[in-house]
Length: 504
Image (cartoon, rainbow, N blue to C red):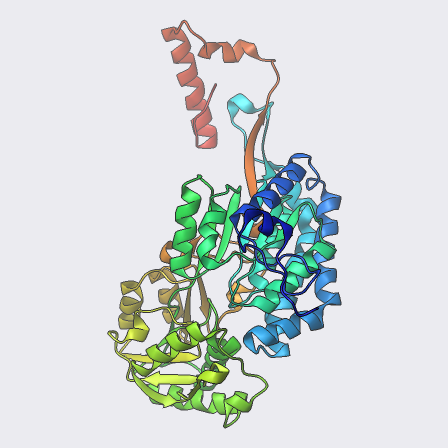
């Protein structure tokens, strides 16, 4: 009986299969827009009742997130292993610890974040209070991606909780085991009326977004992000988009090749290359290209042995669609310097380095989430900067050089969501740094205080008394030249002393 599929009552009433239970007695895992209406209504009623506003409530929910991760670490590792063949080390370090760091950082700083922020006053507001108050937006929708299914769901959730919101979370359907685990655990740890987990198919997400949330946070690829943004625009819903793209990595002639190769190889082939923030291609100075490729080969041997397929430290592609897309692009681009082996039955693609890659190759024109690293050669840093600027603005730019002027030029003469020199990925993990895209790589940012701000409205407040009407009467009709002269004179005084002009 436990293996049978059962349709829930609401689906039977609607006469269509909209919810699915994997086993008798389990809660619905598949939820389409009609079912989301009820969850959204419940969350909105709860938010309007003010339940999520108190600091003590927010801290309790954040502590529950930490407790959930600690008490079910093995369950998360198991789910990520089933979905992505993700090694325990990667699951704990790049997913669980990252979320716990965010939650603990929020707990330790929440009181300070919630305080009103006072701003400078001018001549006419000397005796008033000018401040900004952070208030929660309401009910927010968080859509995670399959690349990092725990981190991309729970790190934004930490920010939403800290800011005092209710939230509906949609993990990626591609990582079904992780999605099912979140669906099962979150109601056991977090407030059942404020926080809900659904699994909406990719094609259903725009319809869910149109139900009208107070903010939508999306991580994923550009095509899906575009549909999400278009759906949100129809209801004037603000969005944060963290979108994948082609993150360039420049390797200069002046750098430590061995260390550079290690850091690039780790970043590119971590999680079998399925990452929004990994280096997507290398622009290598022609004088060191051969040395770099050889060093990368040595790193792959050191990391995964002579047969990465047998390595317990190497993952698999999330599904056959991603596998097939990656394989097809791999076979039509450049020359395989190392790797290239594929096994469809296992969704296995070996860590692969491509050389003799041209700008016109397919791999340079399509986003690729897989263990393939193209290496292009450039003659100098000017050529590298020109190539980077020909592309859409990426989520990350990486530069490896011992020459500080080269690093400075890459940082200042290219535009990207983030920048990191002499390492990769780490800038996207720090709670003290905002992380997000720009242009085609997204909009908005998150992590730490920036997550709190993303899910808050910073309300401008001017607190005045009714005193000193002897000054403010000048603004009232009937307008007199004398009053205008006095206001102009007072504004001039304010402008000279404070650098800006305002007297009302």
